[in-house]
Amino acid sequence: MIRSIVVENLRGIKKCVIDDLRDVNIFIGRNGAGKSTILEAIYIASAFANKHDVLRNVYKFDYVVQRRGGRGNWNSFRDTLWFLKDVDKKIIIELKFSTGNTLRFTLINDVMPPPPLYVWPILLEVPRKVIYPYEEGVAYIGRDSGDQLAVWNPVHRAIVSSLDKRFYESIGSELEYLKNVVFLDEKLPIHIIESVVWRKVLDKRLDKPILELIREEYEPEAEGIGFKPSGEGFTLALMLPNTSIEVDSLGDGAKIALLYAAILSLLKDTGVLIEDLENHQHPGGLVTLMRFVLRLAKERKLQLFITTHSIELINIVKKLTEDVGLGMRVYYLERDRSTGIADVRAMESTDIEILQKLGLDPRLLHIL
Ligand SMILES: Nc1ncnc2c1ncn2[C@@H]1O[C@H](COP(=O)(O)OP(=O)(O)OP(=O)(O)O)[C@@H](O)[C@H]1O
Ligand SMILES: [Mg+2]
Picture 1 (spheres, rainbow, N blue to C red):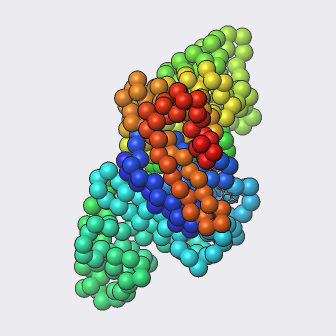
Picture 2: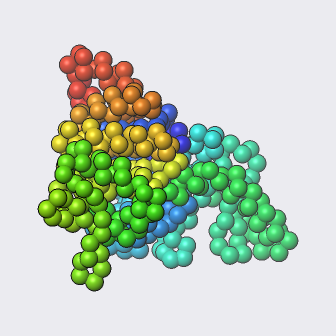
Picture 3: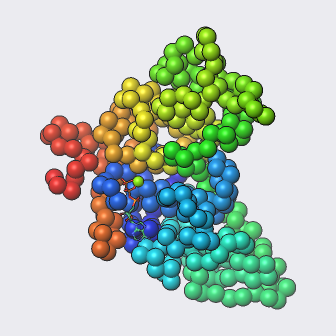
């Protein structure tokens, strides 16, 4: 589990530190406060363990550039990621894990491929030097990328590679966590969910609880979820008593619930980044969907990072995390637009409750 995050020079954030993260982390704050940027920071870091976004079939570095506005790719638009487009600075993303290890990733302005990006993991608390890989035949040694040594000698290279192996072994669980991180937003392509995710869902017969979720809130008469012929291939559809409806034609609330439920059912011991989860959900749907999501989070050890503008979502998660026995916290982000310093105020469940009992809205902390 990620315990704390430091982000530097990423989009609107010059610097932001978030400590004491929990099982469920909700980010609130005004438009442009930097909530989505925090999710993007974790997503970028996850590219170190797996550069490919399996849900979208793209490189994560391309998607993080594309997701705002949909133009270009890493090579053509990467400068948009740097604070004030100052690409001479380094983007730094530091994640401290509950294992005690801290990984610091430094993004350097360079084209891909190869390598897509130089991402440097550093075990900060290792007092001596650690080794991390660069290109074939060259390794950098040091506690920071400023402290470098090229290794050409074959004997030295053998030493480097054995240290390298030890290094990777020592961060095995962190890499496993990062490898499986998913980013859920409204731009999930349904055909990949159909072909990749649903096949795995069926292999494990995880479709039954998903059908229950859909029946409970969205389509009470649904009898099943299955593939039906469509053009050259097959498309996922909801079976109703008198017809079948392609998942893509369902209401947005039901479609998102089905996609998210399918994806989360397959994950374990990792982080899930969710943008504006309340979108398209009726409050009743939000309760049902969150109950499903939080039950999975508990069972499958998923750490959630959610951005929202919804007080209903905050209150629903507060109540349900208490029921299920998960830790939760709400982080109010406030960003100084000229300096880019993002200030974070963390609120426990009890703080949220007290504020509301006093008639105060935690989303409006800047004027309280
Ligand atoms: N390269 C950049 N340099 C400086 N500022 C940037 C850069 N790219 C984006 N920004 C600013 O960062 C902010 C976007 O932050 P972000 O999208 O994380 O906010 P948010 O809290 O998710 O907002 P919302 O609630 O609207 O979704 C905007 O104010 C934008 O102008
Ligand atoms: Mg946002």
